[in-house]
Length: 164
Image 1 (cartoon, rainbow, N blue to C red):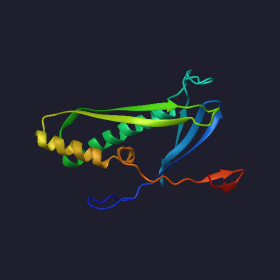
Image 2 (image 1 turned 90 degrees about the vertical axis):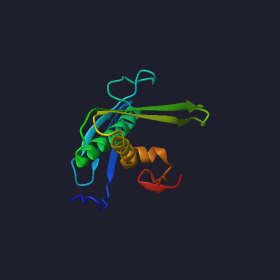
Image 3 (image 1 turned 180 degrees about the vertical axis):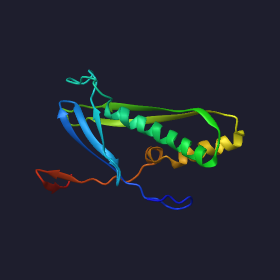
Image 4 (image 1 turned 45 degrees about the vertical axis):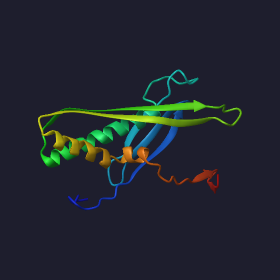
């Protein structure tokens, strides 16, 4: 698909996850019309049966946001022919878990995200400020976290669609 400089491009990413065994999960994910990639996740020993053999799902989620922002930094710098070096993005996500599974009131909540962008460059300050602002605006993952979007849910039990 050709990308126009001032055009619109629709992007669709999907993932399907299944259990390998215990806390080990496997996902096949990718964008429409591209290769699918296999990702394995595990929980750490803080979860009974977790072995810590792979990153946790939340680790992938937070890393994905950092990588998304950094990809946009590279995208903008390349297209504008800006000289940047040592570019990094750090994302720190904070969560809290409360309640009880047995009582039925267990829940997880995101309490905050910190996004830190670090770039070295001899380009003018205002040019780099514009690059940084645009990179934040262009990152789909950051946009999804930064503003609440409507989630659509579908559920099936034993092959039959059900309402929750």
